Length: 274
Image (cartoon, rainbow, N blue to C red):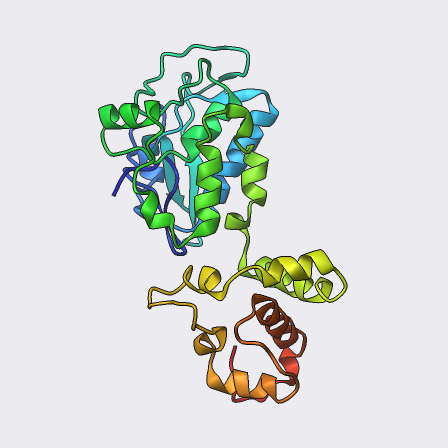
């Protein structure tokens, strides 16, 4: 796999590669090298970047070796950025002694937007390959994100050639990739409520094919004859269709199905688990 500065993405798993604890001035016994962290650790790093950026500072060397992982007393892993004299600068300063070869964007100066490029970095394993791929905008292992559209969208934005098109750290924190399941469910339920009275939303939902959304989460063969009820427990389908009819070829109808299931969740029979 190619090396990412922060994100090597698979379904629900974030891997931080080579989190070596080699930063001078640290009590290394406080930290561990972790290969697999969850999305909360991505939030840890983003929140630190937000603090830096709010102070008008840029983190100069956003690479895996400068991500430290600490286990708290309660066993929770927390990620943080290493800090020493060459790690931060004000946004006006444009040079540094830090070694960023193979990690830095093609931008002429070190900026907050350059920080965000490094955050989404997926350009290879060794420094020379990374430098070549950055120069030619060649994203490595993009195929592992094909079935993870939120991640693909976020990383593509972070890697935009035009720095002005890159999201801020706050934008990243608010991106759908960072949403918890509850927030995603609420969005679907809200869409189910709104589409009945909003023609444009209703038309937009109808324009999405079942193939597009199901292929995201399933590796099995999907074609134009695929219907969404094939991926839901028969007991749930039977219970829900007892009260209302649904078009199993329609994304709009699927949204309504999920909305109704959430609204009437407490009324479901006990043998149905969701």
